[in-house]
Length: 156
Length: 337
Image (cartoon, rainbow over the protein chains, first blue to last red):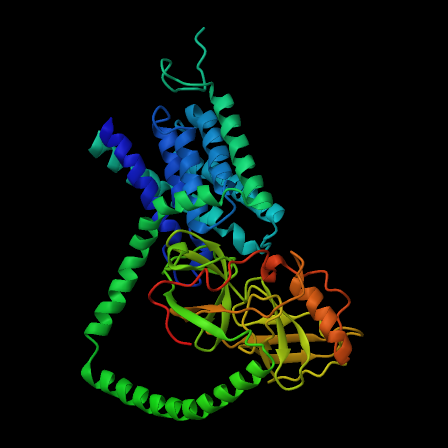
C-alpha cells in the first residue's frame, strides 16, 4: 500500500517535470498533458487511493509551476478526475481503443475549461494549435496504460 | 437486486460524499482564481507553494546546465583560442568606445546635475540566468534564478546586452517570472531615435515582431528607425534600445501599420540583467494606464501623432507601487554603475 502511494506521488512529480521540460519549438505545442493522463490512469485503476484531492493537488502544483492563475489547472484536473471517477466502472471494461476515445473527450473537456478560463482572465490564445495536446494525449493513452500496468504490478 | 455505487472508495473512512467533495474543491479553485486575478491577495500562498516547486524547476534545469558545462569544458582548444582572439578584439574596440563614452557620461552627469535631474540612469544591475523551463507555449514568459531574496521586485526592468528584454511579472522566493516585450499582453512606451515620434510598442506573440498600433499615417517613422525606451511609466530606464522599425505601411486612412523587430535577443539570451534605476519624477501617476496617458499628454504639444486616448493600454507597463531602488538594493552581487 505504501509503495502504491509512493508511486502516485512519484508519477505526479514526473508528470509535472515533463510538463515544463524544454522541448524544441515545433514539439512544444504538441506536448501531451502527462500529469493529467497519469491522474486519469490512477483514478481509474485505484480510485480508493488516488481521489479528487490527489487530482486537485497536482493541478495546483502545475499552476504554480507554469505561473498561471492559481486554481486554473486545479479546477481542470478536479473536473476531469470527478468525471473519470463517475465513469470509472464503465471505462475499466472498455477495450483500449474505446478507452482512448473517452480519454480524448476528457482531454477535450479539460482544454475547453483551460481555454475558457484563459479567456476570462484575459490571455486567450485562439489558434487551433492549442487543441493539439488533446490528440497527442489520446494517442499516448495506450502507452500510459502499458507503463502504468507494468509499474503497479511490480510495486504491489 | 444489487446496485453498484459509482463511488467505489472504501465505505469506512470514505470522507464526505464524492459530489460534495468535488463541489467544495471546485469552489475553492474558483475562489483562488478570483482572489488571484482580482485582488492579488494570495501571493503569499503562491510563494510558499513555489518554495515546494523550486526543486522541481532546478531539477529540470540541471541536465541542460550540466550539458552546457560539459561541452564548454571539453571544447577543443583551437575553437577556444579563436573565441579568445575574437573576444580580445571586441574588448579592445569596446574599451576604445568606452573612453569616449566616459567623457560623454561625465559631461552628461554634469549637465544633469545642473538641472538637478539624475533620473533614469541605471544605478545597479544584477545578472540573472534564465532557467531552462518551459512555462507556456502561448505566452512569452521566462523564469529567472533570482527572486525576492536577491531584492528583485515586481515590474522591475530586465535588459539583455542588446536592449530591453521585458519586465518582472511575478516574484517568488528564489525565482522571478519575466514577461517579454513580445508577449501579447505587454506594451512599452517608445520613441524614435531619429524623429522623436513617441508611441507604444505592443507585443504580438511573435518573438521577432512588435506592433505599433497608435501611429498615424502622417507620423515620421521609417523602416530602420531605432526605437528607444522613453522611461515614461517609470518601469523602464529611458534611452535603451527596444526595437528597430521593420515595416511601415500607410494604407489606411488614420493609422499606419507599423512593425518593429526587438533588438534584444529574446529567444537566445541565456543571461539577462535586472536593473535598478531612479525613475523619472512623475506628477503622481495614476494606478493604471500611466504610460498611455503620459504619451497622449506629452505627444500632443510636439505635434507628433497624438493617439486618441489608446484604449488598449495593457496593465503591463503600469507600476502601482514600487519600492525605491535604495530599499530594493541587492546585497552583494550588484556591480556596475
